[in-house]
Length: 348
Image (tube, rainbow, N blue to C red):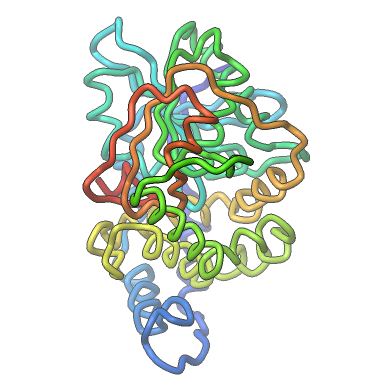
């Protein structure tokens, strides 16, 4: 059963949050660079703004301008935005966020997309208002099957799927498990593997591989922790709003086309509202479990035969060479974007 949903966080949750922010205890710092992680001076500013100036009720009202619903599929609650186009013949478009994102990533772009599409934007199982996952096995393939079922339950026999980060992996699997109904994909972070035989690479491809190597060496420890011991880390981040804020905002700074300052591409309210969706729903631990589930998944990678468009952003964290991507997808459209990073819809 699909039921309408409006966000309405209890006052008690907000009071508890403010009390925790008032008692924030930050660690020492050697300097104010980002070399060791988020600078304490910047984090202190964010914590104080969150505590004293940020207005959740205002942001809640803005989110509630989007038509939202809940349903249950495969034993899991699924929250989603369903914004229909004025054009009844418009193509339905399923758009899926990743980690550490949320539907906040799509808040500004959904009204623009509804000029041409019926837009369906679910919260991943274990994320935000979909609530925590309650059993094992919620890997990208299981999520893909659930989202394909959602599209069927909404009466859509023909649709497209879009995504970045985990959303790209889910969309990729939808292209495999539901090609009878999903007619095309659009990805801003397609997944690929190194081919056994060497292929000719452009200078741009080589630069992308260099960026991949840097990411693996300097920026990927979070993924290893979340794919091995997410519950342990989840204790700290579920107990400390300042810790949760630091963990997530660092990624928005490092993975975006921000020139080192996240607030050149995101507003302070956007950054905190995205964090709020994890805090008020208590889903940071369950969101990180997706990394564990994916690492332990037995679903094989398969070629995606349906038409696939790729938007390549220059500051995307995983920029696989086009020849590699074309071995995994039927790439029919490819655009090298002039600017932007990992959170493409939110940034650009």
